[in-house]
Length: 325
Image (cartoon, rainbow, N blue to C red; front, side, top):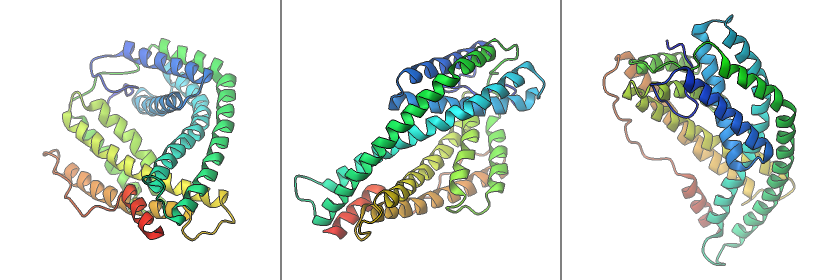
């Protein structure tokens, strides 16, 4: 197993310690910018960088052992970064919900002023939910800025220590990485033998680490890149379901007392149900395919068989529009 950590902004395969220092320095700059003004783009970039660096440190330290100077610094950084990540996640999730709500409203509105009456009711409820989300975003942004302010000095100092660590933060990518990725995925798949709505979100979070590893090995092993693409599609499908589900629950709480028939909450629950079916189908087929390929010890990846697609979110919205008409 590679003893370095994964690259923060995509694999290079040719750098060692200077690259690791560059990535930690880039993370520190993101932290400073987000602390000044946590825009949607900055929050997203810092959250991804934090998650990736956490995964990279965890992976790299498995081979280096718990008693190195890097291990001690990494543990201190991870403790602080975990609290930062939680604050970032609340803001990021709210940004995602606002963006998805904007797209949903556009689909419901249709051209001109020809919306069905029940669609107009849904749009009014969307206005209520949007105001609630914007309020949550302002509150979460203030908490994030307070978190960054209270921990930035410690995080910055620990970041400097990571940059100065004697152990290399990144080692060159190795050939044969796809085999290692498949072994890690097989272990993960064994922990989730029966995917369903109760386990899907946790499965997605665990996939990320394996995907980062696949991306790291891609320069030296192109097959690892195909694995990364498959894992990324699985993550995306699960994320789509999780977002609609969370929005549906929020709408139910926010719009409590409103008629549920032809309501925004009902529509969001429909979208969540459709995307859950799609995510489960994709993950089950992809998991079976990857496990089978892993057992074959590395022949070319066979294509995933085409199946009748589950309706997309846009198609569901269109169907709901017809229903309301």
